[in-house]
Structure formats: C-alpha cells, structure tokens
Picture 1 (cartoon, rainbow, N blue to C red):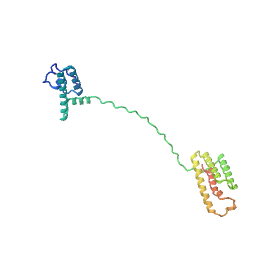
Picture 2: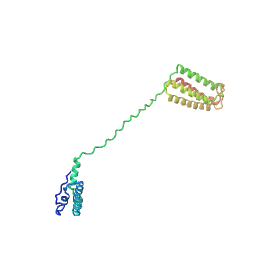
Picture 3: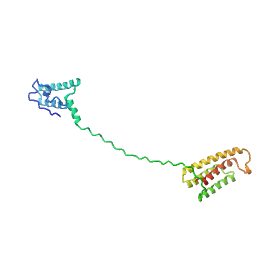
Picture 4: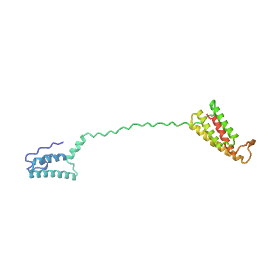
Length: 228
C-alpha cells in the first residue's frame, strides 16, 4: 500500500499544482488512500474556506480522472496495483465441511427356497399326529352333529404345530397348513359334486359337510406325518 505523501507547505495555495499533489497522493493510490488524504487535508485546512474548497476541488478532479479512465476502457494505475495485491494475497481458506458418519445398512438374508423332503415322523411328533388326527377323524365320521368347520380349524392348527416342531420354520408350516386345507376343500367339493344324490359307498351315514371335510383332514394328516 502506498503511503500518503506529505504535501508541500504551499501545495494547497499553489493553483498550478495538480489534484494529486494537492491531496498529497500518487496517481496509483487506491480509493481508500484518496479518501484518507482528503480527510487529512481538510483537517489541516481547518476553518479556512478557500483551503477547504481547493481540497474538495482536488478530490473531485481525482474522481473525475478515475471516471474518465473507466469510460475510455483504460485500467487505472490504482486498479493495476489492487489487482497485483490480490494476486499476491493467498486465497481465503475454504470452509471444511463436516464429515458425515457412514451408516452401514443391515443386510437382510433371504431364505433359500427348497422343496421339502418326505420322511416319516418319529417319536412324539408321530404320536401327536396320529393321536390328534385319529380323534378328529373319529369325531367327523361318528358324530354327524360335530361342526365340520371347527374340526378343520383344529386339524389345520395341529398340522402347523407338528410341522413347526419338525422343520423349525413357522411361516412355512403355516403355508403348508392353509395350502393343504384349501386343496382338501377343493377335492371335497369335487367329490360331493361327483356323488350328487347317490348314496355313499358301503352305505356310510355321512352328510355332505362330512364328505367335503374328509379329504382335507386326510391331507393334513399326511403332511404332518411325511413332510420334513
């Protein structure tokens, strides 16, 4: 930055002095330096109106000179000095952004789909299936007034329990239970439609609800005994 030059003692009263000499600045002084020199010269002039008017006239002349340089497309010496100072000054540091923590998404293991194997149930699982479905089939065939819907619901629940004990997969057991129930009811409906009004083989005293429920209970029994 150029230092303010002390004007000669007679520069304020010398009408032939240029505006820069009157203010005591060099032609490449910055705008802030010109402003500071103007204020300094006004302080030196005190209450003298003539000296103050000459300082103001010199200040206006400097501003007009800078304005003409810009209008003519010329770069003033002050602008060149300011540009050189900006090039020498280091760039301001860039603000550092906070680093966001990495979030590890849990990996969901997809169960492998595999066809079940057929193996006869053993131990308590076998006796649970045989005893439970034996009781349900006995009620279905021997008690015509027993509600078939309740017997089918109990048979489906028993199938789910046995398959859960054998396969250790609750959703798969539920799927097998309701799937076989649906297939059994469809087969039972087809059987009822095929028989129509004809009597049952061997003269069995069964109503249509018992006939339609019988295939579903048998399928659930086979699944409980064989699906592993």
